[in-house]
Image (cartoon, helix red, strand yellow):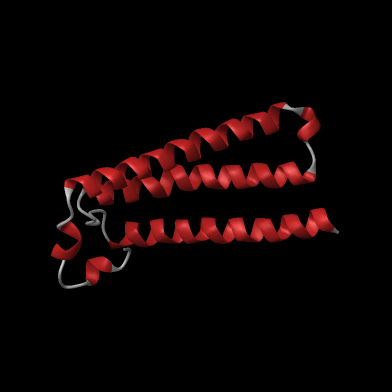
Length: 122
């Protein structure tokens, strides 16, 4: 979707039924809400409970923070794009920055899982 703005025919993605758009927006809204609220609650629990102040839980706190940032920064742009008929209206630079942040978040998560497995299993 990030590079679709360079394609010639935009009518393919814009001619979707209202029901499809509604279902996409509902699921994205649910993902954003659960992603932010759920990870925020877990983060608060990890910070407040002193018995959880150990290395594995710091990794979990880092993953929660990363997921909150991705849910709060990247997903609203995708939500608005779907709402506008899958048309990106923010410009090329914003598209590249949001795509970079999404990929960075995914690689950060994968790196933290590898780091956590190394730390906790050895």
